[in-house]
Image 1 (tube, one colour):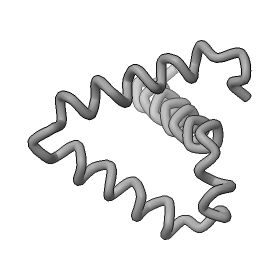
Image 2 (cartoon, helix red, strand yellow):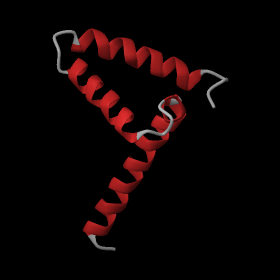
Image 3 (cartoon, rainbow, N blue to C red):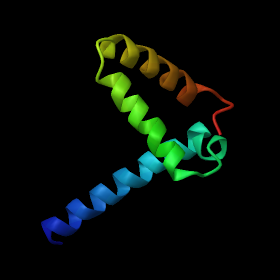
Length: 75
């Protein structure tokens, strides 16, 4: 199989997984499936990660995410 096909499939799978995280987080329902709201929220996250507290924020968010992945109530 050609390399570009494999790269495209890899990228597609990655994007699907990211979309699954958005769905799993409950954001789709909370934002009433409004893509402008979701995009605005993502821009806010990006802005936060671009700030001075990046390291502390990523540690906090990583802990929360890890706990949520391990939680039995995790959808």
